[in-house]
Length: 262
Length: 129
Image (cartoon, rainbow over the protein chains, first blue to last red):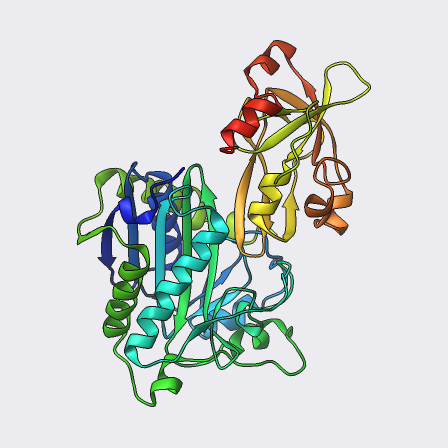
């Protein structure tokens, strides 16, 4: 059996904003190069603001790319499943750990989301884990329109959109905690969407004030630390992690053929 | 308890190999344990016909709600057929993993490679049972 995530040595990174292709490449690289007995948590932002697609989500031909460019939006395709997300005013988290240590993909999802809820509640945001919802296919529309089972919600509206991929023996889960704004560019640029879309909940709506992303990230990190246990410290990326990230950005996440593969 | 049919071969990554009526040709899919662990399957990406894969090379991906996992080819071989039924109804992987939820029909390059796979007892032990 497994020792649980409490047996891991976790490394925490609070990163600056970066391009979507780098963010996806680094998340993937951390999973690809994960060392036995360790886990990595990082928080980051997006510059420029970016629309990300799920690994298998149909996107080719669906978006007005020229209009998106005029709005300063970039596109990238994630390594993970799920559906489209506009990454703008948000705090993005990434957790990488051995899949068996987390008890499998579903147990990991639950445990990580519990950590995020812990952090949000400590901030004063009364978030909770969604009890119900449907299993949605990759072509079911933007990510934040509908919560899936086990997601982090605020008064039944989705607050955190998360997705996972298993890379060898490592599990990567990353997701977006929306600070402010809505996801309307996704429906505007595609003409898709539900007839009566429910906008995502936001941290700033719940708090009634402007929130410093760094403060939110630190609160989320404390929540994850409580939920996951183990030893934690802040550190630098390893040369092998950076090398893998540069390779993955060049070969996959920076390429149009990957972004528009479906 | 997961269903582990006695007459199949297995990998530690939870794929199975099931014999067909044709020599050297096997159906490949994921086990009952794997589908249960993943949850509701919403998409299966399968290879082109005629593609050859080495042992444990990725032949596709499976997406369940939010989680994507690679699918590994248990032994070296060539894809003779893919299960087009999974395009329309990927949940067949959940409802009938060893039947209608099969993924590829594989012509195994060297049947000696099958000796490296797990039988049902060994797979059950691998699951901790």
